[in-house]
Length: 115
Image 1 (cartoon, rainbow, N blue to C red):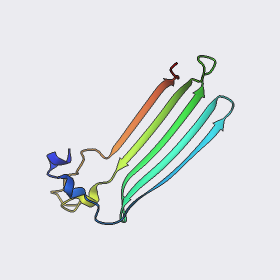
Image 2: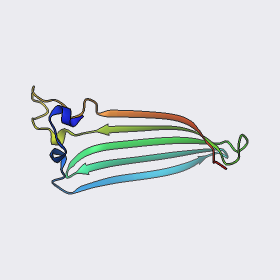
Image 3: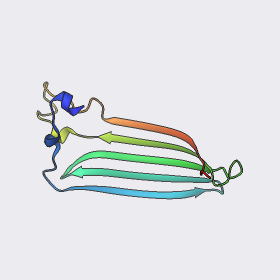
Image 4: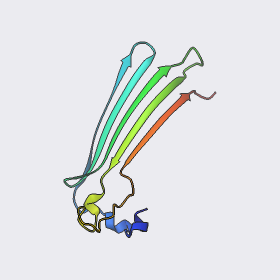
């Protein structure tokens, strides 16, 4: 998509130190439920580039099938590519690098081992 908006790969080169911060935890909610939470943020110098949040609720479905789980998960991403914009973001000529800046991915699935 950025190429369609006048950008090439070289326009997104890291010119400063880049780093990421991450945290994750898991809780048992009774005998059959687990809740996992994770967060991560990516930085290029002092600018943040992406935030990612994820939550996952798992139900131990051993009574349906051995070692199986019913899983509900939500993943949210927010992007900030404005530090790479060629014109100031408050300019009337500004066109965002991506036409969206947020993604939400929701999944429900049955996790069952093979064999």
